[in-house]
Amino acid sequence: MPRVAAPPQPGQRSEGCCSSGGGLRRRSPAPPARIGCSRDRRRSIGRPRSRGGDRLLQRGGGDAAGAREAAAGAMAAPSPGPREVLAPSPEAGCRAAASTSGRRGLLWRLRDKQARIGLFEIGPGHELHQLTCMMQAGLWAATQVSMDHPTTGPPTEEDFSEVLTQVHEGFELCTLAGPAFSWLRRSLGLAEEDYQAALGPGGPYLQFLSTSKSKASFFLSHDQRFFLKTQRRREVRALLAHLPRYVQHLQRHPHSLLARLLGVHSLRVARGKKEFFIIMLSVFYPAGRISERYDIKGCEVSRWVEPAPEGSPLVLVLKDLNFQGKTIDLGPQRSWLIHQMELDTAFLRELNVLDYSLLMAFQRLHEDERGPGSSLIFRTARSVRGAQSPEEPGSQNRRLLPDSPNALHILDGPEQRYFLGLVDLATVYGLRKRLEHLWKTLRYPGRTFSTVSPARYARRLCQWVEAHTE
Image (cartoon, rainbow, N blue to C red):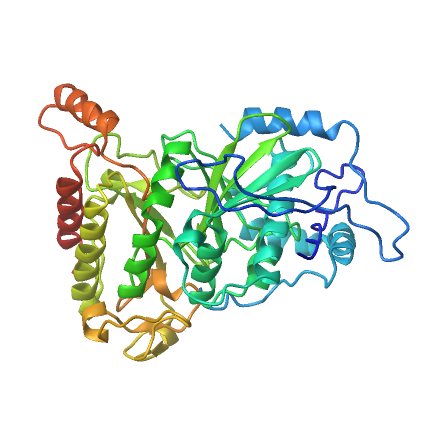
């Protein structure tokens, strides 16, 4: 087995939070029930050398303790347009990242800041900087493994249960079901090089301050194409248990509204607690012209967000009660959306899942983007490169896809472009949620809330879509 190259540093040699060291060995995959256990493939990432091979990029002595503190306190589809490609070697990538800030002029910085208003760049002074450096280094190395050893066919049972642990200096990162997600990324037409460049140390992550009541942390890659979210262990266990059926559903319905999961990982700093996180395509991409964002569950309890003051640059995701009096004007595409919602929520109901959300955003179309066939392409044999299914196209509920990045989550109406996607697919209706349902029934008599049976939840969200579209 060849050595796995260590990832480039995120431009901070003095802090060096991402360097690594060790040997390399492989073990058999672990069953999904033992998330994060020691029966896995374990790799140690070698220390990166400079181009001349005579100097090591070393980690500062105080970084491990600072990283442990940060982690303990903080971690509680088509082409995207311009590509950022990492340098051909990790060392060159490190130098490129380190020199980028020196090349940025004042006007560039102001323009970049304006484009990212409402998001917060996780730079060296940010409390999450050490943590995200480790995530970037670990993801760079994990993606390199899938590039060095590409899958040759659809995922097998072993692929779904594989656990790859890569040991870096001061932390370790586990990749769960790596070959299955690698195949899924390729089926979406996503190049591993692009994925590695966006999630690796080529640029800082962005922190997204969510209006969600969960204690999860939310990040975006520097190009805002990929969304990272921390998850509880039980949620990760549910996602992995459902993963084979999830892949089958996407093969059967290539234009599904379900969020496209791209990876599941865990990170452990020194001997601390494992923290799990997922990676998916961002529904709200590209975000440059989006005017409004909503998180819809089809109920009323705790479904109001105080809007930002008029003229404020703050980006907020609003909720159901904020949407009152508004409609989604889809024209002839309305019937497709209603049918796809029925297909996707029926699938989630079969998985005994609830509490998912329909993410939705608005973007006004330009004059040259309006009208039938202005920028649409009809893909008859397949909707996404590599995604194949024995199903007939009619039974797959295919549609016309806009010729733009993230087409699977975009639906154009006569005047507006809508970004749509079903997210948070890991909450199972078990004993905990059943007890919560009983308590909320007593606490909120006559009112609608999110914790209901999967069948009722699916039906209610579909009814919301029918009532608010035209």
